Image 1 (tube, rainbow, N blue to C red):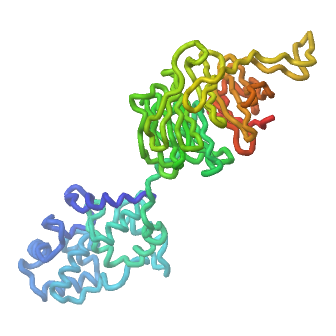
Image 2: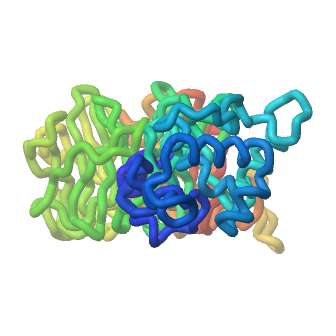
Image 3: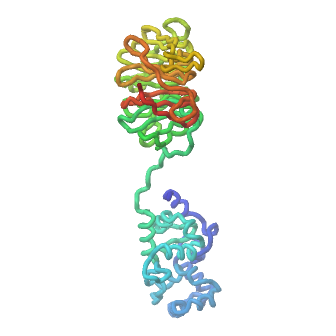
Length: 458
């Protein structure tokens, strides 16, 4: 149950005329029940300027017969109990209506929800389910006004009931911080993956259609959502444990606290145009693949720009609409989608070579059906994402082929491939990213909404 304590200040100054009239003791409407109200009451219903005798006789009659009060005032006595108590104190009368705790309203020997329900209807004019009881409790303890009504009478006469409210609803507990990571939206198009299972037991997956990054645990259950993003694409966890998100809609990279979802830093503004993927090296440097700028921009661990790798073009050392980058050893591999290849640079940005792939033929194929005992590997058609495994091999995801091809990162030779097109479990449609976990499982966003596949690495 929420407990907006800040609202107490507002409640304390609400004019009584705007509230539902239950306790009508504040006859002059000045926000306090005092001797002035007692004098007004006496002038209206008793002898003007009524003294001790008149008041004490009146209060004694009320104590023994509440109907006497109605015959004089034409109203219920419980609507003026606060005023009557002030009068009793002022004139030192023996008025015992509030001398004992009234919490056990049904007189069954215990104070519980049944008494709370009776109290709510009798004193607050509403069902108990409609009351924020911790707000009521905090207001009463503070001596303020709840829904425009004075709570002093409740504090004086319902000590046990207030204690029950506090214990039952946990009002004495500190207000929990707002959960900025609460899941509010369903995934629609999971795209890029950041694997933080080794440090945080989490995966972060961006969804540009929803405008969020979803947080998954190691069992692939959704545990949180970083919201309010603008076409998030690249996502990574930096050396400080912060979640880095590339916003295509804001042309920047934003850093978020992984435990609170708080925005901690923004960088890359004016430098990046389409931060499609983000990669972190062992020194904490940040590599942002910018598809629209045809390069990979490098930032240090403090988010300062360092260098740019690549330039636009079709030549040997150029890039066209790069989609991802992966660092293996002292080299950076870039998915050069527009040129149907993977480009290799050293970490200073010098071009090393290009990896192209024409595919392989199948073995022991049926001439009639075309099915092979050992299927061939598809050629590069739309290189989408890169990852490395524990053996240092390079995994190249081609989303048109719905398959991942593995290369030896040292000599660039073909090793094997896995994945195939399909809408059922274990199949891929138009896969958007691949990350190989420390346990050598390939985590792949299948490309058809909220589906994520876990595929064994051959």
